Image 1 (tube, rainbow, N blue to C red):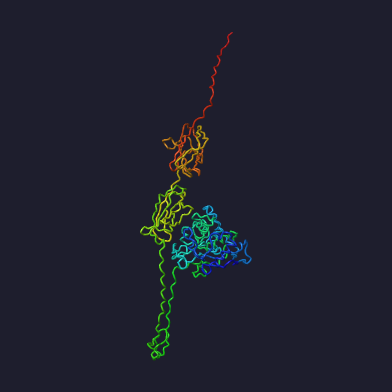
Image 2 (image 1 turned 45 degrees about the horizontal axis):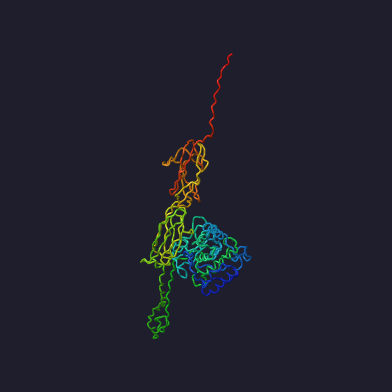
Length: 610
């Protein structure tokens, strides 16, 4: 491994000063301004940083690789020290091709889905390196799925967080406790809502680097964070793993990759050497093979200890008390010549029972109640004006503050919270109330559900029903006052154009129909007079599937007239009840004005007589 400041960054108090000095020196030498201007330095190795505004934690604060980036900039070419068939040195800064492609694809997708986030792929690369060593050196197949599962330790509270199984072992193979999984090390409970399909195969697989990278990008971009701002960048990273050491390490790797990197063949990358649980006294994380068993192995039976007969009796045996024969009178004391009697090992002292910690605020919550939420209705594409408000209460109805509530959108809808997420977590205020982010309606109409639950406790939640209605208009008006006229058998010179509004604002994408009706009182389709043409040129007097554009405008196709003269009516209607009736006149062209010609009287004719 190339020379750098410090061989590892441990979570042990004994190495605090070394680790802090390593990060500080590295930040000053190769990460200008990014690695420590505002977030400060670690005060205790592995100590949790201030809790970020986040939805839980992506990894459950599982162990991570602590190798620092090299001091030298990434090399653009293979190291001369690497053999032709050996792994490429990590000091070169190369990233396995498929893994690198997944990071860049996730950045491109987020640029479209959440342009305000400004997610750099180098951040994903930094986290991917710290969490799994770039999928253990690029050990992935052609589709980006890891060749073997990458698992963190079981989160059983033994030196790690205590997270009981949430996926039935579906992802991590452990039906007792959760384990971080995949190249970006999501815990199953987080993947359940943060998972994404990054490679378009219809599945959300935490073991696929495309899916995991896109999920990590969305996770880092939630809460409206703009990662071009240092404060939001730090909050996002700390929400992934809440440790100041982790924040420093990720920032340094991100800056290292920003200086340049290159693609290397899959499977040829090196694997980091050190982890945050190395030499810490904590159980080591399992290698990415089969998941650990969820039941402890039975202890083997302990064989009995043979007796020791050293009595001085007559050879018939003494009484073995694990020591000496106290008889000394020829009969071996109380011995009866049948062999020794085993005294059991002394019972180890019972360890003291630690005091029961006081219940947390979360432990006090018995149920959730609605806190005055109004009717949740919005038109497609609009923001809901009403926001969901829920209150956490004890069994006797007392409000509980500082409890995290999770709001989850479910049902056949494309509605989201502001920022594009379907899950949001908000802490209750001093009155025990949490106000969810504003809901944003999608294009799908109908009902959907928002479920509110307590994070970390199976307390009774509360459900809300929200409704998305079709886009509507309440007013239609022509954009021109030019009369619409045509001669029989001809075509109208002007096309009909109208503008739709709703409550005085532009009504865009509103469905509309246009029909040539018989009269103002009879909306039946007229079979004479003006008409439109279909794709085959045949007369059509009713048009459906029309819609206003993003400016609320609707321009109808060209109108034609048959040989019937008269005044005809065109009626346009929209969703929401807006109606407009337009007059169409079909009349022969008038003759030019001027004096009428005078008829000529023929002269009388006759014959001359002589």
